[in-house]
Length: 144
Image 1: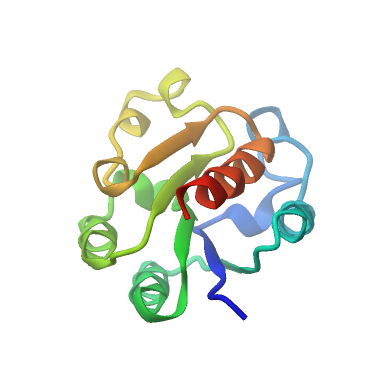
Image 2: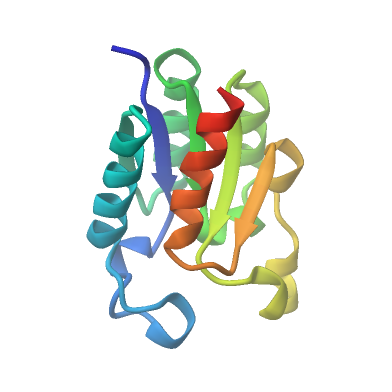
């Protein structure tokens, strides 16, 4: 079997469905995981879907992806805007990276306009809700 796409999710995304539904929607992270699995299955791909609230764990998942994943789809959440460590770990991997955000980060607070992930990603999808994850899987499929 081929290597999976790592779909990595950062802090507070475990609260989707109840956390600011006017911004993030009502789907839970489990709902999004199911959508991703269905999309991947339809393209004959596999996924490894993870979430952590810890920056170091997210960096470790990225490092692991170097050997174990064919690509990374990442919604780093708040770490998008703060983590040089995450940026550095993503820079070191040699697999395609797609950055995803549920909300349009450019229509939000100014501090969210800066991404430490974007400079190392092949593409960025934001503002399309959970559909952004499905589009990212399609993009990885085409890249691979």
